[in-house]
Length: 502
Image (tube, rainbow, N blue to C red; front, side):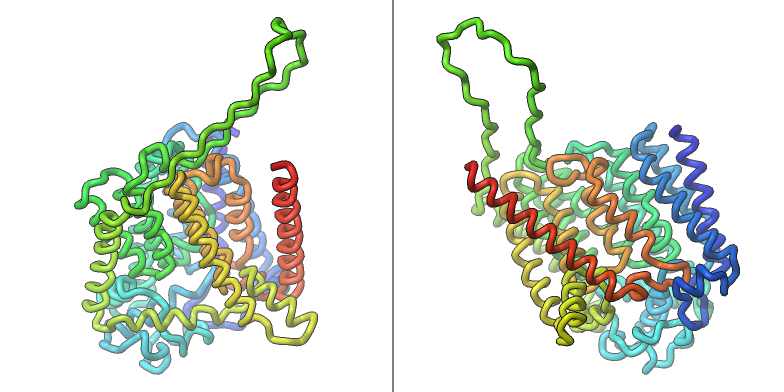
């Protein structure tokens, strides 16, 4: 494919996606859920499913193949920006969360406490647009996002369309931060800046969920990328503190960003070579055996590259003080300015209300419940959180010997996979970092598990926000559980094989 085919093919997909937003996006008034059967059977018109399927397919195909034909970083930025334009005037796609944001901003602007009560108890004028599952739930977001949402409501007044437009501007600001930080981060990690920009900004998840759906994840990932770029650029205390402040702002949007902070500390002290993924030495080409010229010489053992020395723990105190202090200062100041203190931490406890197979730990619980009749979801979710804590510690400890920047992305990936809840736009968290830093020993553009996860996630929702994972809850849970068992068996055999031949 040529760059022109990629650009205009994806733009055609964006126009088709915008048409589906016009025909059947998430409307201002809640209607009975448009499930896959009602959509594909044409109950909302034949053109709606055609536009949605065609637009999604074209966007995924152009994004997937476009990474191989990128002329420049500028071309990637212009093309990704071009794709975002068609969806801006129309209804939100893939989710109704933006209406919850609007009501939470209204409560904050009116002097209420979004962390103490649900939006329906405060008389939000747009309550009819909010999903019933979120009407009595406290806000699970940080003080920075609440302050921004309140400001948007203050500017837009009674216009719900104006509030949505303002929240989309906040999301675009987050993507602008990512566009600035990605090339910097990619150069520090030895990755291709053009591919980093392309993989993030041209991803269909960004167009559908972060821009059209105006999810606050756009601001969080933009601040994460910008904060890591600041820390990796210069190692002076002032720059490290500035990077910590920016990462603290990300935490003040969504608490998930806190998993990046320990890796940012390693970025601050690791030699430049250790910021990059650990490289696997290339295999020597196979050549037919030849008669040795010196038969008496003993064969030489293959050279094994020495493992990079680990960053000593005693070297971490100063960057911990600078980065951790900056992050703590940002969150404390914003918590005070919001007038709500740290009530947002308690709101996180209600973020697990959705029960689908998208979360592996939830899928296992659903499978156990289906087979035994015992409600195992709370137990398997708790196990998933414990497993996440172990994985994060292991990732950080290994990152001391190299790959501090990829370690931050892998920490976000582990958070997505082990968390009690998975929504499709969560896949943008690790993508935003791994696209610029690589995964394991290979560039992100070659990591099919990462790109495959994002492509698959882009197909999980319908235009009005219904999730396929709800419609296929038990079959999907059985498939995910079986896949986890297969992966566990393969990993056990691999470890056993290594022990035998060690």
